[in-house]
Image (cartoon, rainbow, N blue to C red; front, top):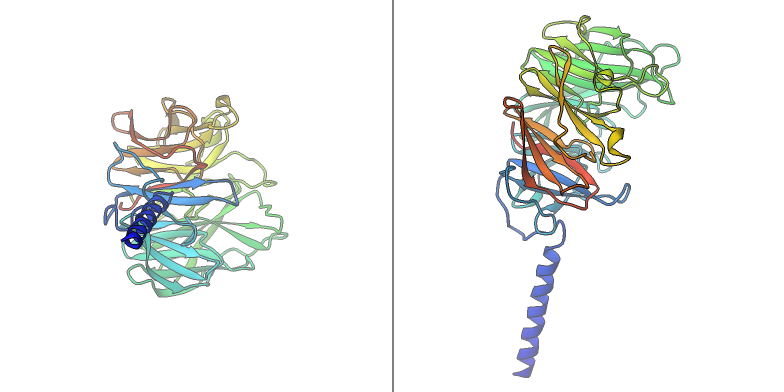
Length: 400
């Protein structure tokens, strides 16, 4: 009887220990949560390179709380957070393992649906969806002297075709490597920014723009544009370009050090055109008073876009601000100064149904989702988000 009692106490303590462990960040109850989610958040803890990322998710951003001590999953061991998201799934190239993965976040776990060997490019420099099931990724080779593409069937990760994009302009003197920028797909053609660089990452004082035939992946037309140097960052980590209603491709240029002006411009190429619109440009840096822009822009509807910038008036940290710009009148509409200063990480906002959702990491009043309605010009505070974190690495929707 005594031995039985001792065994019972031991089992009870063991169960309590397991429950306690499962309440640590990233170890929520197995099988808890919903089978399908609409929105997700990646919270970062610690400082680079010792940063750990946790994924949490919800179906309602207007209320409630995300708590990484009670729910979610640690994702560092499973892949990078360079996420391409479509139709409820996450696609990720884990370069150190040489695999391309398809994930599903379900019941508070990031689970692998499918993975295939893949080493054809050094990393994803840019990507675009041709349709709901066809994903194109583009990147450089390890030597930086070739730009390759792969077309994936997203359902099973089979490769439809891949190869080198042919027909770019030849390397100019003193520049021997490519830099790939943002891209989009419109009616059988791929529009792609690219540039040249040397071994010190210095670029010429212009950028290049190519129109590529999707059927052959051969460049139909490539031109240089001297209005700015640099290119947008087209990788899944950032959001520096957008397509407006299948009518035009809007993209920014972020000049590198040593490439002339550091001001950041917005340009566009109209549907069916073979070169950038020469009559269209917005000096984003001047429009926000010369303050430094971050690598996040997006279209929010009604000819409005959002930009993220740093406002030194807020101090040395938590100084991120969001501004609304009219892309037709090329004017600053207003700054969302009702939001507390943000300490942005990489991609902490998304747009859905003409509403802008922002995950704000602040030192004043706690972290929340803020929702801006472009039609009413009103901002409301939604779900409470984790506090005491380094930042929100990614805040996004699972479905368009």
